[in-house]
Image 1 (cartoon, rainbow, N blue to C red):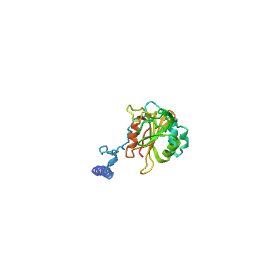
Image 2 (spheres, one colour; image 1 turned 30 degrees about the vertical axis):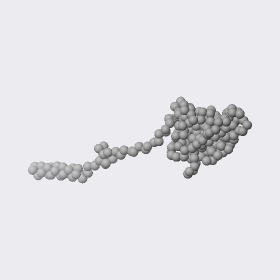
Image 3 (tube, helix red, strand yellow; image 1 turned 135 degrees about the vertical axis):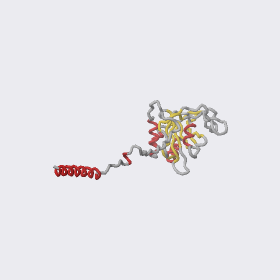
Length: 223
């Protein structure tokens, strides 16, 4: 009886030893760093965005067809379509001397004689007899589009005889040392076209504000 009891006890011990060994042979899994909730997560650095100096139009206004025509013509270097949009001004001439004001009267013409002219120029205003020469000079000279904006004419105006328009389309400088330019539109007609006077950094933004721009149809992007 003792022998049988000893054999049963030995068998039980062997079984317990086998179970213990099998438990020690199985490694305890270690959580990976990705699964560790205590590990810090990477924080993405936000990319800075350029904020337009003027707001976008908020009244649901669509880009006017004439604005799209001007942009397309300048982008393709084709001045011809713009000539059909030109609106000449009927303005009485002046015999006064000095820059600015209405067009100067030709010899023999009385002050107030009506002339058909197109406002243009750069640092000083000009009254061109032929708008095609002005448009043909600006289109190949300017660079990519800067922006297009609605206009509310400023209260203080150094050129009260010039038409004010309701839209401005501004283009950047076309080359190193070159100059940008802009077109003033009234409804679907071009009433003025100019080369930028200031060629420094920020000249487009300062000029677009000076003509009374209030909100963008097409906001500026990085050049």
